Length: 490
Image (cartoon, rainbow, N blue to C red; front, side, top):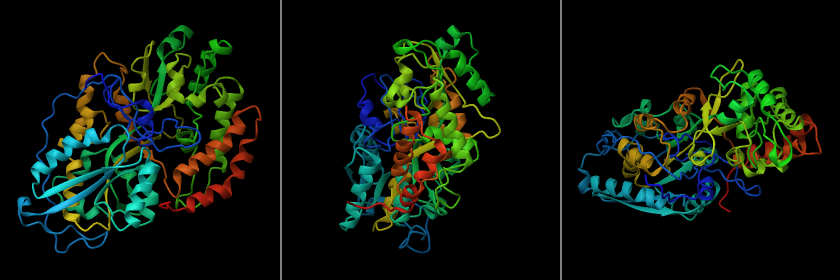
């Protein structure tokens, strides 16, 4: 990729929303991260712009995927098997509508991919439509088209909106299609990304890209402070000891030992601490708010303690700029971050990444974006061909070359060979973390849930110093309503 990117950081932050897995150090965009959006409108967003890029080594592309294997019945319902395809593709006639979002110049990324698909499937044409800069806006457009009686055949989906869409029975269950398609092997994809689009036992989308969450640290600050670099065996006590030693100075010259656990409009980094304490936002059935139980209170009290003791900035002290921006000032020793590193490419200091600390339970977060089919679509056989192609090695290589941290292992892992001499030196950690990463338990109005919790906690981190337990309990009714909510077209 050239150093001239079609993405602005603002646009990319508004694309997907939940986490990042940059494979080429200073180059790749996030797939699913939610780097802090504007405080008033948290957007489930994906990628960050990369000022420079490092392509993967040339990879032999897989042949265009074949049609789903013959089945006995046509897929009239979401759980039906794919229809048999006996006639050559050239004799078929189908016009598919693919609905994607607009951020990051998706039109430019998809155009060559769709051209190759149509060349390999001359009986199928694809009308690609682009609407919505955020996951929420893309969801609204999808619902409007469905309510208007013109559902797209295939659509882009983010893990933050998948549950709400699935609760309305909009996506086609892809389980039988995946099983019948010999070109699809789920072992070729990161398991965490596949799980991001599972809902009540159904595979409702195929992932395009995903990201893990790891620790990024300023090596210069560590060296100046005489503190050893983080290791994969760090416990939280080791982290806290380093934070205390590395916090120094006052005012604009202050160096913070830690930052990033507070996000405007989101709590997904803090949620990892809740998971490690054995808790979650919702119960196992995803029907009841549980963040006010001991694990949640312990995790957020830990963050509050960092702030109140002066080791971590409050929103008013800079966290509102988002963790990545704050870290790039060179005044922060460590932040949690999704595994996309393009925003740090021009840092004026030496930095690297490491696994997040853990005590008894190693777990981190991932988030993804992908492609789904509508259950209401009338050309499911052709639609699956498109989803299958988007999920194959040839298309994934093209998505990667454009800057996405794709879920196809062969393409992603090939990039590691090209990162020698470029930060982060330990880039493989971002991929390794996917082995113990887990998706968020997305349900209801998930973006609204994040916003409600993050907004309420501002009073704890600020000068008001409200009690964490009271704050988390005080929003229980509000969050339970959001858990039960279903998306609407308007």
